Length: 301
Length: 301
Image (cartoon, rainbow over all chains, first blue to last red; front, side, top):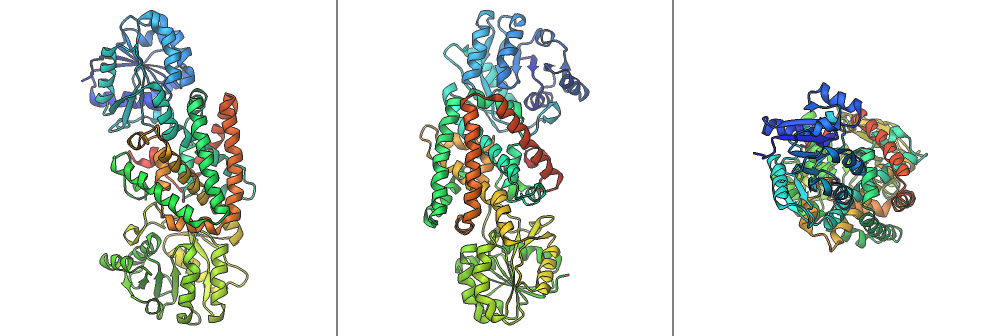
């Protein structure tokens, strides 16, 4: 059971709505109040009965024991500026941002004076869908949540936020914000950028029609389009806020790609075969770790 | 109903075994004889009762009305050299290679003198699995098969091979081998190479442990590992045999990637947002065309 009996959620997208639905399933006595800056999003959330919806950010956090910031990372600072005067001392605050260093900087500088206790966290779960209708109970089940406390983070608050994510079905891991940002750059951010790029290339090719792309995308490309269909604002903000790690990973990526391109040009089959064999083992590890299903095509067919 | 009552399949991997199982489901009276150069693969196919298995390529094609070549594209020439003296005039031959120009060149130069009638085809279907145990009935259902006849291709044979793939549940499309190779370079080959590259980069990063990669790959990277787990020999051969189209597409890809990398470095959020919004529409087209499911994560969760 979570110790938080009243929770406020700011920003009503996929993660927020999945939190609502999961809490309602696991611990229906918890009171959830939601707020979104966008009136239309608030109305949609209300229409599907997601949680109590307030029309002002002030009302949405009144009496909350935990505030969860579910806005794109580029909006964290603006939200905390608005919020800070309504946060009661002792209220625990967490976020779900995919970048941690910049979010910590944006938030901590504003809430130190109001004694809000901030615990940075990143539940690694999601789909290519967005909006309040996209959520579902079970999104977090068995997935990892990384918590990135700083030296100033209150130990008790950290424990309670960690317990909260575990209560939603997640496994948790503590690491530094710097390391988190590098790990996510390789496992999530760079793959997204690359998928966006490939989809952009295809969109630009005059010799291949759009219907050809759509019809013959079964083999490989459709996975890229799924990744590249994710929320554009969220991703823009991620790329603007984890620059160093991204440029490092992209530099390595280009280097590797050029080595394979060279092997194609030189018809170096041995190099290609060795490379392709090596990449199989990582896949096996992921399936074994239960982060994906071993059935072909994720069991889609 | 297919006009071919006895079919020979050379090379017993994912596609071959899926053809067997689909035929057995749709038209059990058709006789199927299989052969693989690798004794161990033959034994595995025999063990699961895939089809009749012959120990010599000669016996496997005896009396066949249709021969389907399901070997990696780099082995087509060697197979047809072995086969040519056993092919009876009028036997129809097709293949399932992902590259068409080089396969046509490899095969046509050897079978012209034996009056074998070659119809190049490419059923676009597959998973990351390989081997005779990987196949399943239904792999081809609703997917596209591209046929790439040349001026010399016998019209009647073309019609009968087209009817065969339709009989397995596929939609068919005729195009030139040149155009096929470009379309597949963008929709399949380049995405695969890029996925291989990204998985290679991650494997090389000393600062991130293998278990971190495995645990936190939920968001994006696991799709790359799926693609990069495909049969290494098949992919080596594809990259060695469609060089021009690949180098063209990779050149464009690098150009685009650099433009996004520059936008990250310059913190040009407007450029990134515009780019990411554009890529969403292709995804919608693919879901609407029925080449993928619209449920989040392909309905995996």
